[in-house]
Image (cartoon, rainbow, N blue to C red; front, side):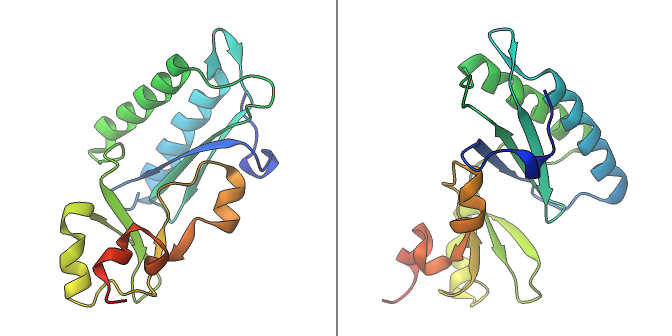
Length: 163
């Protein structure tokens, strides 16, 4: 049962998926329609869960489930992954590969890079200790306010900076 994202409780469980590029306007409409349809029927063991989604930076999809009455089961999580795979295939994007790092570039726009090449971004000075990065370990909606956008030095990327 779909609810607007801002009406979801702060302790709602979230999953964050970064696309490897921004969605254009028609793709945003498509993604929103697909996610709303999915959230309307997202269930665990046949029972509808209060769910929602948000799209940030025209590139990041956040799925949310209020687990206060009903926890998301493995099967329900698998169904969300299938829905995202469908979006990936339709738009020719990479959403589900978690080996990506999101950070704010000098123009304060989100840039998403493969984690394997992130050391070169540090060496080139593109990514610095005080660069804002998206924390990949957020788990609750409240984390989006308090712990999602952090400096690179407060993330796992700290190992690349001289301390």
